Length: 445
Image (cartoon, helix red, strand yellow):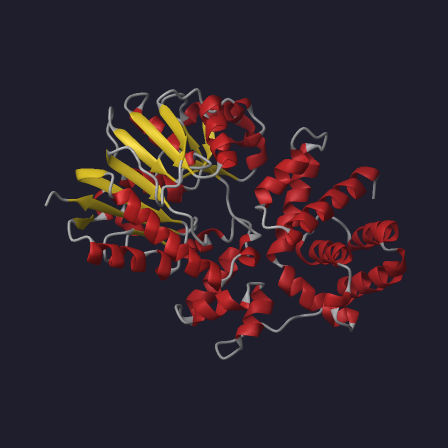
């Protein structure tokens, strides 16, 4: 293994260490190591793949390490355990590098940080490569723990989903969460056409897949090609989930309108709304976090957008501008985005959902006060948990008789809506991020 290969694995170890000991989202940790660095695009792709994959499958990997280690792996130093995890992940889930090279590099790194464990690293990883311990796939009557280990999800979430989904549906959801998700892009139809994108990416145009229901969304099987291209860097194209595109469509925006975007950071919906307004009207984007507000401002500057005002505000209690259209993308558990956010499954728990529900209720209650009569309010989450979705809406409607549901199927394809008229996206059924959104109309009483 060359020096670059060792160096890239050491960076991966540091990223995993930072993710393990903090609640900082993985994408921000990547920014810390990748921004203003001389790491090559190839090494960045490798580091991203191995870190996300290792985090995603860490519980199953730990079970395998424990099998060969023959001891309680909790007694191992955390950083050393990370070295073993990366090694096992590469052997079991990546085909690009020969097993002997993975073992050799892992031993070299162990010698650098934990010399006393170098023989253990060598023996353990050789056993993994040679013997390939098979974990038994759980059946319908298997325990929560068995599901948790095999599919590498936290037990609390497995237990919760077991009570919600049939066995076959649960397996599809867990498998979807463990696959590398597609990266979707939205292009600004006011600045560029898909044919131009295909022309710029001539060599890769056959790999471009347009979204079936959103004509300005597409994916490409080599997204790094686009992420480093000028048409992305100059703001003509943005990374955005089709789920968010559908939710913005639910607003039914018309030129010259004023829209409030609540809990707006990092600003992808704000950009989408601004593009739909085509430079007319105005948007006020609110967020409580000053650092995340800077992300909105950076995105606006990159895209040269002028019709947006960004304000720091606690939308659960502060006064807002009155408007006829608002979108409230509330803080949530994010369980619909576990495939995309590899670290999310390990950084949330059932107590988080309970506290989030209280916050979601207060945000919806406060924001609704500033919607004008006959105005439209979109409540949305990237969660697939009923407590954060329909249960919030049912309670709100019970307490606010002047609000009614406006059926989402009038604004988006019925494929994405449920029987009660909300956008309700299941990740494995729709092959995109899971999410929920309901359009509420405030009637004058």
